[in-house]
Length: 98
Image 1 (spheres, one colour):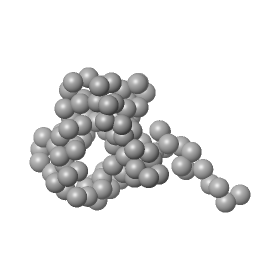
Image 2 (image 1 turned 45 degrees about the horizontal axis):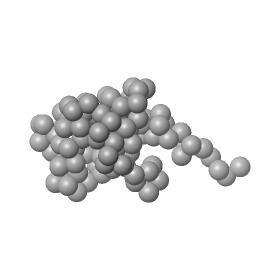
Image 3 (image 1 turned 90 degrees about the vertical axis):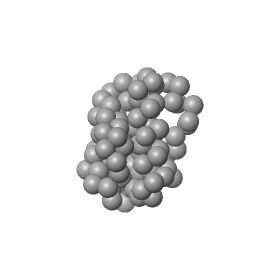
Image 4 (image 1 turned 180 degrees about the vertical axis):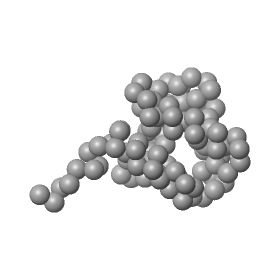
């Protein structure tokens, strides 16, 4: 991961931790990397719904994903992504064993 990609990822995580329409789009993007099957996919046309700088950061992270061939937890971001799941996909944390 180069510096530009890491900076973009950190900015996107911060945005996703907020509670705005753009935050939801960024969270959807990041969580689709984490686990698209469980957390849902990302609609590429959502790039139209975010500011140009955010879209550019997403593109940097797409390059990171392609180059690293790794999930975010293996890159040291498990805690941040666990937090995004708690925030945006709390239904995934419900215990269905009762």
